[in-house]
Image (cartoon, rainbow, N blue to C red; front, top):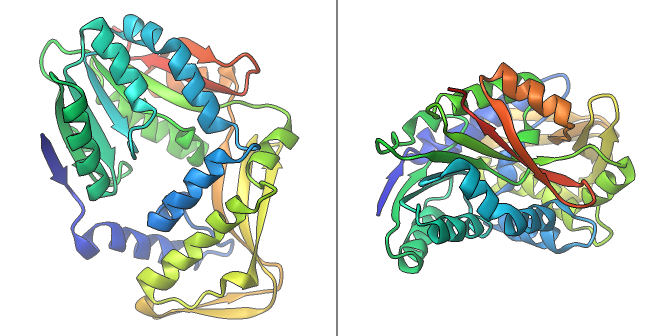
Length: 325
């Protein structure tokens, strides 16, 4: 087992948070990137979101994997799986099992920002799979993608980016990121991309504003992160959760709306931030995809669509793309 870390105190995750906050809260339209939701408490809340009846993406993606993992492995000939944002690798085991059944399983490369999670997952998988090699990467995949080790000559690589996380990128950033993934692939290697699909806006909005209020708590948790990490004094009760589907852009937006005039201090940055009554802070976009949009994004990134696997209701898709040649 090898685990490499590319985050080092304030030069890693904390500095990235500080930079994002300074940039995002001083813009005319305030926003923060959604990656900062996921501290330990945020991860627990997200697990609860996945259990809510309105939230279809996680369970639907898992069902597609369970139905089609053998076909994915047969199509790709995968011997190495690189997973971006690996987390607990819960869904990944479905792919690893299929690779083991096919007799091709050699190496797994989990990539996540949380070192303890990478180490725990690596240790558990080495116990579960006798012939598996694990090379863990601790880092921010937007900044450290070049640290993924080169594949062993003769191996077939699949890079998995699951959960619909690709939808958190704006269109230009999405294509730039996909080009960086394409650079990790040799001709014949593949990308397995989890993509939420365009559908009835009411279904999408309900998934991001569940009746139990779990997503609202998850959204406000980013303010708790700022209070703890940057000595800010956000009053979580002074912000209400907002989620709506933008039909023009075909993405969901989550925002936090200030319920009153207020001034928030972010003492670690020497920053005071003014919020007007009903002023909104955007915390996430999550784009939804059509097959045509995916083909265009992949083509602009030097990739081509190989296969697409979806559920019977057309809610979610696993898109398999390849490097031509």
